[in-house]
Length: 328
Image (tube, rainbow, N blue to C red; front, side):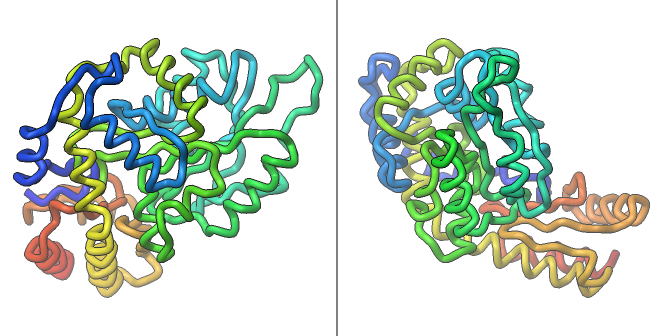
């Protein structure tokens, strides 16, 4: 079965599994696991930050950032469709007493600067304290413009706000723009980087930022139950992913475009948006339901009208997908 529901469905390769099996281990709660220590150092270096902390999920690494940036009664400003606001269980509010201040989020993911400025609260005890802006890159596969991130950085500096990036697919954004991960991460105080999507690790995320910030985030990780013991087996998967699976993301982008062209030829180019490793289909609900059923009969699993390409999609799979689309 070819699975296009998400890039979270990827399976560790045999080479990754071998690296996991051979990992040097220690107790990470005591800071003694050499493999996860190396993963944290490598992720921080790649993104140009001082330090990193490994977390079991992107949801937790984002929550660590929010809890460390903000205190009880603070607020963070975020897009209304952002993952941290809409799809992470309201953890910042539930566990941290942090109030989200949502703003309009266009499909580009680029929050309007004037609207951002308008929701920053004055220093008045009637209001929650504005403490942080949170962006997402990529958003629904779309990479943020590098110049835009610099503008948000300047706005945050003007108002003494922190700036966090949910960089679950940061490397996809870097490849799309022909930039290094360090360049994409530069405007941000902190960045969460997911290892278990297009990079193919079975689990894990790394939060990177200033050394003192990461030390405090590590404390929050313990509070949240994220401290793990001989975690180097998972750290080894992350190291393998960073060493071997970053540049190949360009293949996923190319595969998405190829299938997008096939869908455009079938349904009209205006109905298809290709964004890095994702396709978005603007078809009527009944038309898409018939297409999804047809694809399933062809051995291709899709869900919502967002198809995601990843390292488990081989060349022959792309050919099969295009053939199925043509026959729909």
